[in-house]
Image (cartoon, rainbow, N blue to C red; front, side):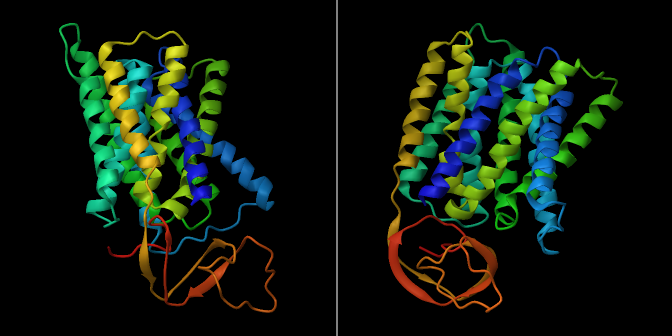
Length: 345
């Protein structure tokens, strides 16, 4: 659990910082092209890292049934989501946009609960409600608000919905190579968005702007996504989304440090969302539960959930990855709905 929490929080820090930094480039690059450069940097960087790690590009371990889930995740999270966010940043301050990204955690959890039947207790639900209230306060119209600003809010909310769908689709392939998942998403989304932008008549910016955009993408989208996928294995979708919801606060803090002004609605929204995130990260879920028999493959160590025999030829240095079977087991301990704890309540 602790490992998954650390992974989710590190992913949040990297992604949160990317929003105000990308905002600095919005005036120099059209939104769709900027989205493409961010993901192209992510994909290219992770591609090189995987080549160095494996001394080549090994075949992916996805099954025939997992490919549609990954393709769907790439479409929503890699193509539609970043394009919507960059469009929203044109008409929204980086601080407000960062806080609005809290809606991603809410929508991720709603889909996880309603579609994939993950467990949720009252503490998590109350935290989500506070985050929603904060988002409503932040987007509430006032006498000085421009129509364009509200369209920016809607665009960012649409990006959150796209990433929420992406998170839940990625959950089904989270046990495979995280570098392959994140690198594939980056390369495909980057090529598609850049190609669309150039076909619409946009021109490439200076080499300095391209380099900055790709570096932000590698850290804020690529490395962040790898850590997010690893956290999904340990925490489940809704809880990973809950921990990841601290990302907007890092983004908002950086935006304010860069000199962006704030309003009373911003601080009220920040208070509501802070309370909601606090409820999430202080959750303790423990009860007696039953593990049914199952067989799968993923990286693991020999803890209480992984007590099995090995082939004599297998290198058993930990952590290791191989196909293994779980026997039926009844016990009680703190847990999240990870790959081993998707049971009824």
